[in-house]
Each structure stands twice: as C-alpha cells, then as structure tokens.
Image 1 (cartoon, rainbow over the protein chains, first blue to last red):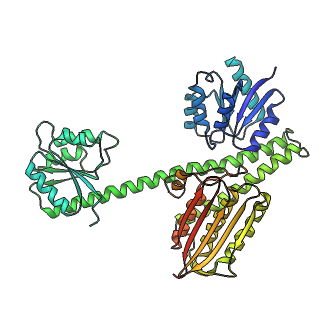
Image 2 (tube, chains in turn orange, blue; image 1 turned 90 degrees about the horizontal axis):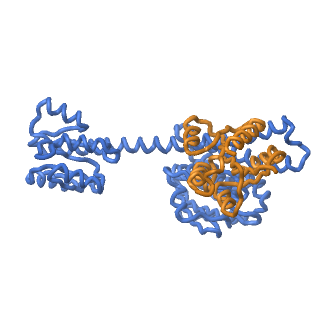
Image 3 (cartoon, rainbow over the protein chains, first blue to last red; image 1 turned 135 degrees about the vertical axis):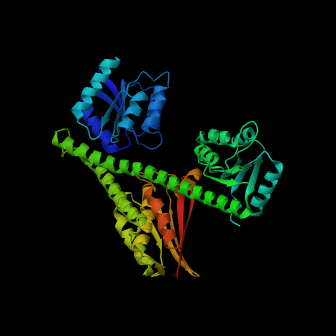
Length: 124
Length: 363
C-alpha cells in the first residue's frame, strides 16, 4: 500500500506540482496552511510524513511544527521542511525544533523523493 | 513645557537633597519618583521604566555604584541613562562611576541650571538612540519579509520550468493550464511588489522626485482603473464610479498614482467574485475627498490598528489567494502624508472596507 504524505503550502501551483511529482509512489493530501493541516489531522488524517512550507498565513510552518512535535498524538510523524528560506540559522533552528530534514526550493523532485524514502525507512 | 511625559527616578539617602532636586525637576514639568536607598530603587524599577535615573553615590547599605552595576545587568533597565550625584568629585571616583555604567555625573552641591541641562541632554540622547534602534528593527524585519516574498515566487517559477524540462509536466495537459494560471497571478503580484519596493526605497533615500502641481485627480483615477481592469474582470468585479468630469488638486502625480493603484488593487484583492468596488470623488471647501469602498472580506478590528503602523507587518491573502507583502499600505500612508493629506479606514468583517482620503486643494 502506498504511504501517505501531507503537503502543506500556501501556493496552489506548488501543491499541484507536488501531487504530480509524488502521486506515482505516494498518496498525497494537501492543505494551504498549518491551520487547515491541523484540522485535517484532528479529523483523523494520519500521514506517514508531512512536508511543509515555512511562511504561510494563519499558522506558519514553524508554529505548525511546534504543534506537531508537542502533541502526544502527532509527534511521531516525521516533518520535512521545504522552503525558499535558505539561511543556516533557520535550518539549525528547525532541525533543533524537531524537523527531520530540510530541503531548499526550488528543488530536484528526485532528491525530494529519495529524502522522503530515507526518512520513512529511518522512522519506520 | 515639553517635559511632561518624561519620568525621572531620583535616588538619594538625604531627604532634603531629594526634596530640592524634586522641586527643580517638577518645576520643569518632569514627573519625579523618589527612593531613599538602592534596594528600594531597584524594587521600584520592577514596576516602571523611567527615562533617566539620578543616583547618589554615597549611600549606606548599597552604594550608588553597586545599584548602577546591578541595573546595567538587567536587559530591561540597562538602556536607561544614569547620572551620578556625587559629593566627592575626585577623578578616581569618576572613573568608578563611568565603569559602573553611568553616562555622566554632577558634583554636589550642584547648580540648578547644570542639573537641568545635563538631564535634558541625556534624555534627548537616549530618545534618539531608541528611535534609531526601533527604525533599525523595523527595517530588518521588513527586509527579511521582502526577501522571502521575492525569493518565493522565483522558486515557484523555476520549479515549474524545471518540471516542464524534466518531463513531469506536459504543456498540453489541463494540469499545466491550471498551474500556469496560478503562476500568472504570482508573477503579477511579484511585479506589483517590485514596483512598490522600488518606489519605497527611492522615497526612503529621498531620490524620488516630488513635484506637486495642479493635476486632474479624476484622470489619474481613471488611469489606475484602466491598469487594473483586467484583474477585476477576471474576478467579475464591477466598478461603481461616481466621479465629476474633472477635479483639480494640488499633489504629486507619481506618488498619488502609487496610492490609488495600491488602494484599488487591494480592493480587488479582498473582494469576492461578483463583488462591487465603489469610487467616489467630491470637492469640498479647500479639500478633495476620495472614497474607495469594497464589498470584500473586511478587516478585523485589531488588524485595522496594525495596518498603518510602521512596526507591524501585516499581510493577508486575497479571495483568490493573491499574495501581499504589507508594503502597499505602508507606502499609501507615507505618500498621502507627504502630499499633506489624510487617510481614514472604516471596515466591517465580511461587509467591506472603506478608505477615505482627504487632500488639500491648494499648497
């Protein structure tokens, strides 16, 4: 059975492209910000991995990551950050806060898929 | 008197000195708080932040130097200027005072004029330092957001180009058309941001030519509407225009164009499909009134206060996911003020927003 990925990003083009990239090997669900993503989790969605952007309206990636990592129910779900922010301080901060990996936009879709598979093997 | 909102804490173990100093300062309109010893002063500082502290050095229990060292270690207090009051003006003591973090000293017995001049100078100095610091903070925050808002759309465009290149995205497929129209919006928003950014930076550096003259506001508004008509048509938004044939107003054309363009494009952005934008211009005694009203999402009360203030960066998405940077309204306010005008906003959530601009007819 295909593993489930939840993609969180405020740009519609990005969400659609992620579906095109990943749908072959994964079940892809998308949401436009952290708030909607949290709602989907509360309603019972259980992804094997979450791939999130950082700067989004309502609940941004950082706050979303904090929510996931401090929740008893969701903290085991690995979170990968995918963002155009590229400073080392940001990466360090997010990895410390519990992100599993960090990939910079624009990205190579093959690299994204390999990294996702590695994370899934590691956290299985 | 100008000093009425400035607050000074005076710390001295001699009650008579304390009373005299207080009277001198209060006569000039300063608010004065008192403490008879160091620990009391430190305790008081937990509850309020004065603009300046006058601190006696020779006090029993805890001397002024010690008090100063302690408060310079506290982040909340360390920027408050401390002036030492000292009976012993020997160079060794002065060195200790400056080392402990004092900005100046006054030897007792002091003259009234000297006290007042030193107090005034140091409060002014601290004020300008704080202003520069705040300005710097605002800039840094704005730059970091702008750099994201520029980088992010380019990343999205590159990503799509690569996807076509690598064969993930067939340019004949419906997915492509869909993604393409998303990108088109992103590109439009980014070019509007660039326009604003360039305007803003030339305004900040003072290199924006500002040449107010009598211009026809109605013509200017019509130009802006023409420019934005396509994005309004895309969302099936109607314009309801109530404009005289012409109305002459004394202002700078370039900056007013930016103001009107931003307000109208905001109205389009926050109005749902099929909504209406009303623009009403009328001449009054010595002023021209421009009203731009939409039937859009409206702005929440706590946000209204934020949108025009410099230290807040507020941005939100439009009804079709249009992006924003918060730079637009920032510019609007600065430019209207530069044109000696005023802007007001009224808004009700889910009903709409109305911006009113008042411009003087004459210089």
